[in-house]
Length: 354
Image (cartoon, rainbow, N blue to C red; front, top):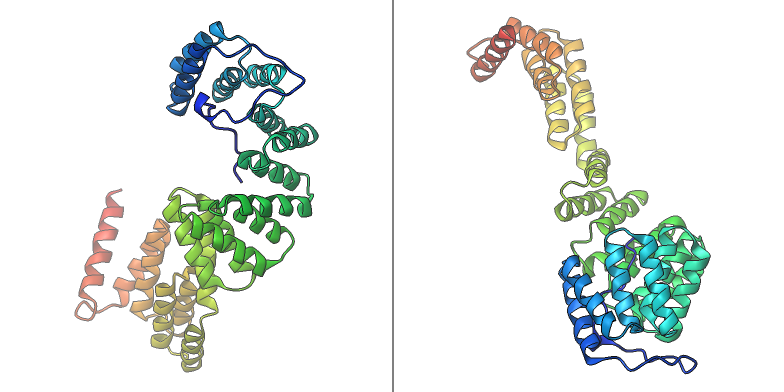
C-alpha cells in the first residue's frame, strides 16, 4: 500500500477559489510566478531553490495559500512534520477550500495513526473536489487501517470509476479479499493490478500468496518470479518462490509417477535416478533422502556418494563433502567416472591445503 501525498501545487493548476466566508488579498503576479517555480523545483527535488522561490513569493503575497501548501511539502520532504503541519494549517486559514492542504494534513495524521483526524481531513478535501484521487485513495486506506473494509471497498471502487488506469485500488481490494479469505476475488483484483502496472512488486507478491492459498503453486511461482523481476532484492518474493516451486514440484503428477515407479523398483540405480529427478525440480531434501536410501541398499554405490558430495559442497558443508568424496573415491572406478574422480581429487587436495 502506498500513501499518496499531493504533488506540488503550481499556479497553473489552482482549481479552488476562496470560500465565500473568507476574503484574501488579490494574489500578486510575482507570487504566482514564484509559486510556479517553487512547484517545479519541488518536482525536481531541488528543495533549496524551491524554498527560495516560495519565500520570495510570500513576500509579495503573504496570504497566498498555495505557497504555504508548497512550503509544507518542502518540510514534509525534509521529514520536518511539525513545520509541514503548521504550513498546511496556515494555508487553510487563508483558503478554507484548499483541498491539497486537507489531504496533506490527513496524510500526516494517517502516518501518525491518528485515523479519526486523518479521515476528517480527507473528507474535507473530497468535499472541495470529489475527483481528488490522492484524497480518495488515502481515505480508502484510512478505512482499511481502521478495519472498516466495506467503507474502504466503496472508496476504492469509486476511485476506480474516477481513474480506471490506477493499479493501487485494485491491489488494495485484493488485500482486503485476502483478509476475508475470498481467494478468487483476491486473484482477480491482483491480476488487474499487475496488468495495469507490470512493475508493481507488492501486487505480484500478494498474487503469489493468493495463488498459493488455493493450491495453484505453479501460478504462484510465476507471480513470485515476476515479483523478483520487478524488485530483484525482495527477500519475501525470493523465499516464496522457493516454497511455491517446491510445492508445485511435489504435486506434479509426472513426478508422482516417477516416484512410484522408482520406489517400486527399489534398486540403488533407481533411487539414484530418483534423486537426480528431485535435483532437476529443486527438491534438495528429497534428493538427499533418495541418495541415502540408495546407500542403505548398497553402501558401495559410487554415484550416490558423489551425488551427496555435490549437495554438501553446494551447501558448504565441507566436512560432510569430504567424507562423501573419500567414500566415492574408495568405490569408484576411474574409467567409469573420470570427471567425477578428478573433481573429488581436486576438492580434497584444496581442502587439505586449507
